[in-house]
Image (cartoon, rainbow, N blue to C red):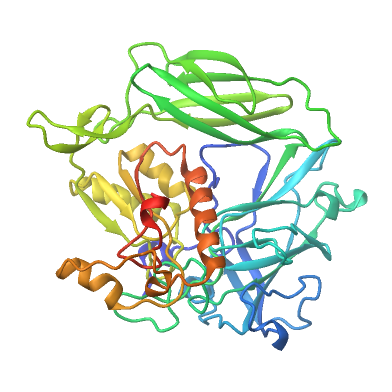
Length: 471
């Protein structure tokens, strides 16, 4: 079944919007569209290791057809309609050109919004991005829900960095779904009931950007509404062979009426900027956002922040309450699964993403609990702009777990001791360590989202362990 947005899909230019609204640069290009794909059997020696992926420089000699990226091959919008099995590899290939010629000292970064689960990448026949999360393995990235970037500059020959020159990109993907301890959400190879179809491979935007060698990597934005201050950390990347230049960045805070604050701050350290009174707070009733521009060396990024606070307190009668901007607030919410009938994990368009949030607001809801999935950053951007609070689940993983894990606590008040890891599917120490690492990375990834008001580390005991410590 296709949605109205899926019916209107431009296969050559799906999801063309800039994918990172809180760190915007001008020199970029979108690689979504029609790629070539192939399924192959994995080498027998690698079947037992869920992290084993083939060498991407040894791509198949024959390709199965076209796939529309960033839709998983299991989805109608991909044009494929096939499920990747644990003993198979999914290959992608496409040609690309840089957004513009590289100048001296600039770097080309290749971004993947999300690839499920483990991948290796080659550019112009040279493997790039080695040193992913999985220690001791050869992979660019493992884990299916978070973005990653690869500096591909050194894989591009000097003579091939000119305007319009085509390069080749190959991605090899392995996805065992629920056959190992990876985070998987509601994906199941035996879908049915509350379990949904697997989503394999590239399922968020792939894109290129050009940056100075020494550049801004990310911003950490923490509003302090009680004091009218914005705490900002400008995180930078400085290669060992490059002079970092000035340790100071210029930050400007503005509204549609013009600049309201400016400061010069030290990079890679928290600094506070005073927002002139009266500070306009962010809330579902008034989702006001301040614009930010940060300049450091030869780099400039645009961002935004909402001045709000979340907490726990008591009301006038002494009852515990959730607080929004220092006042009791009762969220009225929905559980948002984030599955689309035609795109699976991937919305058929940015308009569709916004429609879901806008419709929920029109129906009177003020909160969406994003259920065991991390969405593309544009979904959170729509929540920020439309005034929709977000409760964010961590993505569950681990071994198998059945009704005994989540049924009795809900109906008879009988609770399992989650320090007994086998009972909740967490016997594998490697899987527990990866979950904690992914949880930290998810928090950092979404830390500055104005609408994100609450974290849910575990859902119904699925893969739960040591909850008191982790919380």
